[in-house]
Image (cartoon, rainbow, N blue to C red; front, side):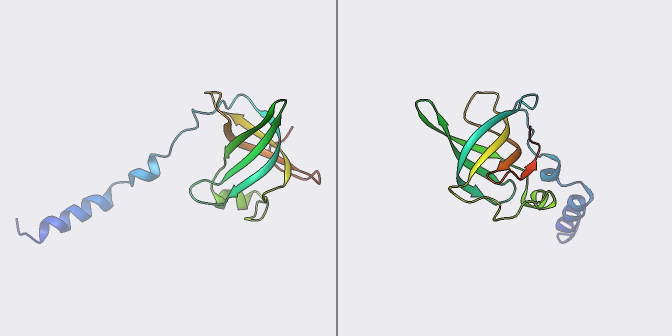
Length: 125
């Protein structure tokens, strides 16, 4: 086979197969999607990034504060749900609704938020 044909055939083979990263997205099995908890929280950071946005927040507990990390969907999906890059800022007092991590660690999957003015985004109780 001619030397120049090998790279050409390899490129054609790659374009004929589906891209694996698109098919290999992680699952939500680490979250208990059958449970939803409510967290009265103060936002410490809102990361508007791909592939997933994140909310970091402090939650008051009887003996102090717990820091939570909440995974969201992509900014593109959030925009379609009414979110903006500026929807949350550090210091905002919110109620977060999350599907907790199965491990019991302080984190979860975003379900909804109630803002201080009573407005909501996502699934809230």
